[in-house]
Length: 467
Image (cartoon, rainbow, N blue to C red; front, side, top):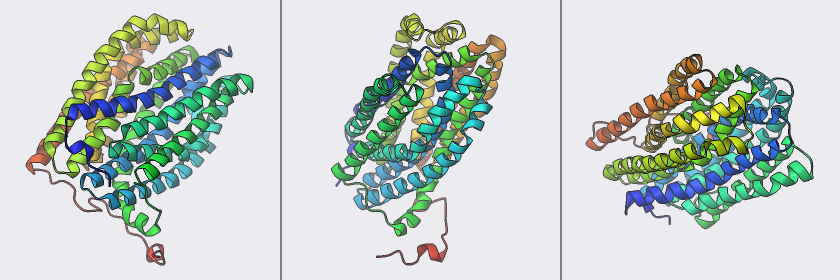
């Protein structure tokens, strides 16, 4: 039986352990992305970096949708473990995975047919458009594989097995790293080789994560249509707001790319490089959501709001230390980054502005990640939806527009930083206020299997399913 690991012991220790192990795995994949960019740069085709930038915007959308389902998986599993209900944890994890597969197949099919249209809307043209289409047509069909792998990793983190989740992403990154040069140079597949190496990495993540969740922890049950129909309401209650929450960021990024594209391919390439450097540099911040979420979920399941509050506060302390150190390091190494990627003109400007001014704003991005993780695991995912849509669209769009008018292509990055500061501060205030109100009983915690969201199935869907 899986124990509620996070309901006892030092919260800060749990935050550091979960964040560091998750970040190692994440950064492994992000470093591979950087190496992808470096390898493709060796091919000497100027349009490759811009093509990856355009394609990355669409991939970010599909990955964000998967993250939404993974959040639901982790939250529901952690709550069940906190209640010491292993049978419920097994049942709901399988229902989440089934929903992830179903939704990913439908969504990826739609996106695949719209790839040329979507890239054109983003501003890709000519050879850049051709390369981006090739890359996406290979990667998009593997969305369902990635979805299952991410759900499996969420189950592992919900149990406190941060190392297991780390190994899944580390092995995936290793597969990508080995196959990249083989496919790109030895087989001479170019950008298609980079895409196929990423597909292989997704398969590896899926296999390792499922092994850990289903064999090591025995926390994924057998699929049952009856269970699925009964569980789908509570799965959707978190999954839909979480998917909308995570979809907000790539939608905002799509607008950003459109604005940057007006300054030329060099500016898009600079944005693409910044987009690859950012998660490597701030992997610990990106990992905070996955680290704090299970801690909040288990303690919420156990009814311990003091530890829920402390998880948020300790997450902020950890974030502050990471951002200060990383920002200083980026400031010192900015010229090295420009040289390594052969950036010039607008691309070099973007990198220098990011390293000098924008990096420090990631403390406020950390506020958003931590608060959203708390919202999702406290049964109020709509709060995180509002938070992310506010950051990605309501606040970011005008900030980026005004920034581009004021400072051109570099003003886009400054606008994004301003949006993070505004939304991060407000979101954290709302989060702490929510925890205090739930602790005092002013806001009643959601109860029951289908709280707040009801779905009715026709009789034919429920008949002849028990065996």
